[in-house]
Length: 103
Image (cartoon, rainbow, N blue to C red; front, side, top):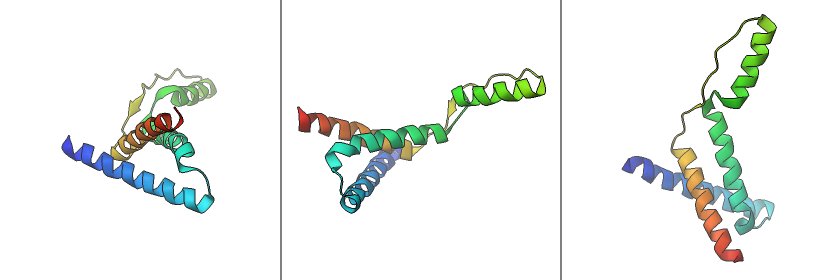
């Protein structure tokens, strides 16, 4: 458990550094966009590391209609790792800092 927490902090720091460098290169406000970038990254990582769910149900429905077969539903299963936890940690920290900055 300690290894996951440590790797998540490292992932969050790497994500923060990449967003900071991108904010310098593309000239956008780090404090305003870091939460939204972290949120988008977390959602993308979650969808790419999961199987089943709503997207798979739609594909299964189309395949069963085309083949005239009834296929069983797949439940949502996720296989997230430390990068996902790091992006969630980055998102939560940037939300907290955004709230402090604007309120």
